[in-house]
Length: 218
Length: 102
Image 1 (cartoon, chains in turn cyan, blue):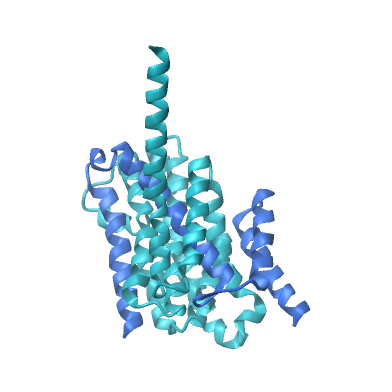
Image 2 (cartoon, one colour):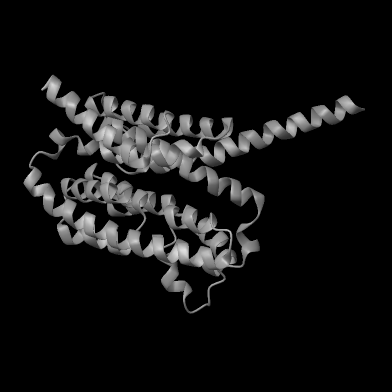
């Protein structure tokens, strides 16, 4: 259900961003990781060049490599199947597979979720892209609020500790602040730097705290 | 043509990272620093993207109906509403705010 609505929203958003229906459908068929797709069409709509736009989408997709890492141990797939299975390594399939108590359960969970979502996501993308023309002014329907809401819904559960919150806060400031001064698509990449920056600062702080503790113990 | 380039780059890049995760030996990516950075990277990107797509029009920061919609989504998230309700709330409230302010 949720994926169905996001798929519709993606189709409409993508069409509203100036992508043709084949381009929109190609994204859902070939990229199949929603946040990256929303990021790409958003960057293109803002006038970003294809390289910076794709770079933002790519970095957002990097988290799937880490899902794959955990899934490969859990599912223990034969090497020949892995290139096929890779396409379905996304937030939802990983969540379902990792929640299963047995390898058999994880394999079934991964396959069923992957297949269902792949079909649903692509059908609703097509419907959304075709429906966008009929909707006319999509902004009047509030569809442009769907993609920030999708991002926020993905982000919220990640904000577990102060470190994550500081990273998010800094990224918002950089992402918005640099918007008028850097070429379209670049500010989001600059905002990504808040992750290593905060990680480094946190490492220094911990290092200093450890030193203090050691000195205190003397 | 430009758009097709972006579509192709994204498709290849996103598929490649998915496949890498399944193919590389676990130890390669299991260094703590790499894990921490990988966990924080989506936080930074999602936060920046949320802000840009809710509070900017192209390259100009603006405050409009989308801000109200995003606030509704945030409330839904705090109330632990399902994903569908969160996105639905943002869309409906934004549309409502635009209809009211016309």
